[in-house]
Length: 220
Image (cartoon, rainbow, N blue to C red; front, side, top):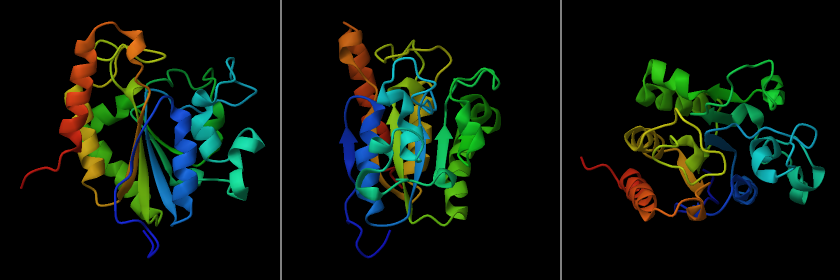
């Protein structure tokens, strides 16, 4: 980052994806930041396409300047991240492009590496590709957004919209380690997990253990 950048790694843990807005707003003050958006869905709805009108489903759209002016232009800082500096990774919500409710994303320069594509070329290779895309765009670093919905519903049912076909914990750890060891990750938020949605504490324990493993430095 720039000479004004902090020399620590902020880790923000919270409820839904919309907390990302505050993190990016703060980060914009210290340099040109990219974003890797690791989630089961791209969250590119707007007031016109969202049935719930909840900010969580609009998070990436808001972050890149699309949507409610009061949320997209805080302190006159729209966009908090340029759409060309944003990469959606691991989503599995774009089964049919024509009927996809967040199809506004296809009119932007957001890069999309779906989970199917990532698995096709190899998750480690796909993760490295996401980092390389941001390097090519000359960012000073990137913020990593992680939503528990990227995980398969069999191992992580405690999310707002659990879906099959998501990542296993082993896949999650592989991906996160590439991003965190890239030398460009400047901070991370962890969202989407709602313990009230499952009475089984075992899911919580497995989730936390996997995150701890992914966040630990790899031994040489």
